[in-house]
Length: 307
Ligand SMILES: [Zn+2]
Image (cartoon, rainbow, N blue to C red):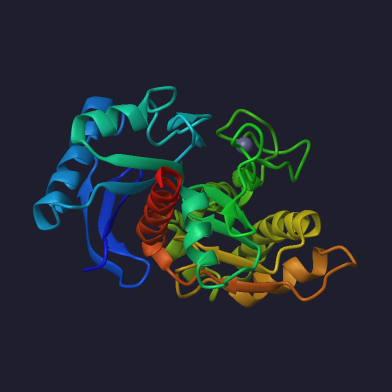
């Protein structure tokens, strides 16, 4: 029987959890609502409940990979940075606490890094830039089959690169970040400011409107151009083999992916050499699949070190 590994994907609304391994993929997955996202005891309780359910089914699972919003010090398993949807998880001993309460081993990563790691598994030995466009903008880079973290564990914060120095204020406190223009929340807010009479309720409704309202269509294209420029600049810096773009916005059927691809190519530096720009493969399961893969690789590293 092949060894199985656990995954936890912590978000502002749900904890997704799963187990499986690289050979079998995701064997089981489910989710629990995070009813009190500002209450750490509640969050630890939900995590323990997910681990209990997994262990009830597969008692031998001991290694878990976990994704969370925020910058993550992966050696200590501590979240730093800004996490607006889970405001109190910053600077607490998350890894130590989860391991102590549940008698397991857990490796914690930024959720976009985990998504990118899952996507990179489809592109063996290639350098992969992963981007998620949802409530916010997340990104990660897998270089030589490993997640690139940077000296402060905060590499690839593409959502907080500046696209307009006199621009809109971002949730991070800075002015003119990409995320302030082209995350789902920002696109919706900007279009409601521009067209208050339309009272647009959701990002899906907004994308529907682009088919029938040329002014909305132009506005959305203008906002997606900020996204395209951001991704083009990242490609110019990193020169990856593959760029995988996913997240809630991109998964909406009306999202014009070919427009985004063309904008990226238009704004690339002249050294563009055929980087593959593609939709992400794993959709909203990238977090749990990446968690399983990370847990498996961490187990193998420990196993080899112990020998
Ligand atoms: Zn920002």
